[in-house]
Length: 341
Ligand SMILES: [Zn+2]
Ligand SMILES: [Zn+2]
Image (cartoon, rainbow, N blue to C red; front, side, top):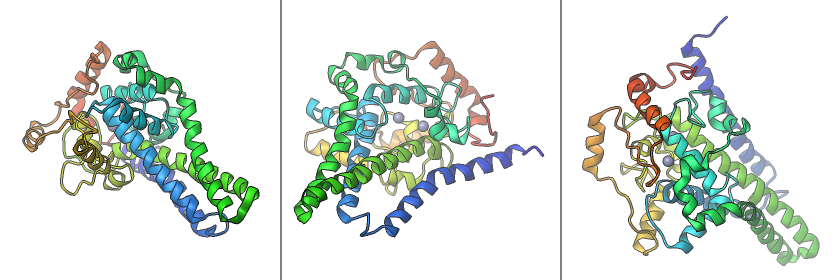
């Protein structure tokens, strides 16, 4: 028997929850089960610190600083954040930026690389398995003139390797200093590879992908954008502020994604601290008046200003126009299981 649209969309949401949550719960279960036998405090601390560093590399470096120019920073600060972002194995800075700009220019339309309206699996990870190739020239062209960004992108593999080597050396070093000698160093390095390398990359991946899938499916909408983006409290925290995704689609260039006092935005707090220390300047802020005006304006007014210097191509422009005309229907998220066909 054929499912109706409502049943299919509910099923999609349940499966999406399982895809994201089961591996995370299983990892926590494995940690508890193997505590003091195969998992120790050192590995967990390395996992946590590396996850957070990689996380801010993506949210502050790749996303807010590079893609949306939410703030400017000295070159050495930019280099650190872009290297941290590279360590998460989410593609080079240039590729990440091009993919993300394509998402903003075509959110939840046919040319969106990872809309969950296509299918829940596609929005989360299927788009990567489908061998998506970013168009850097079209969606991140102005960055090709930025020598630092080009260098760090070209040496991407080196930074991924460094992100694995560092936890290996730390965990191996700690184990050998605790009387393990050479044998302890080797075992510790392998545990560092597992927890600080593979498990950490796995969590960084799923958290970022969840912003694409979960935050275009579950949560509330403060602004009537032309896509189906949502503000999601859980990923507001886990994704270090990126889960306030409806706010972000309404104001792509804002350095702060949390726009109400209870919308915790760890990346925004760090940018605020960097600004005080003189490490970030020209920080883009959206005044409460502008937010209020945007709330009242309703649908069809998404500000497409994601990468200064990047001209809207005719296809992207028509996509935005199309989004505006179908906005009312698109805003009814998941009322249709596959509006792209
Ligand atoms: Zn989005
Ligand atoms: Zn963005």
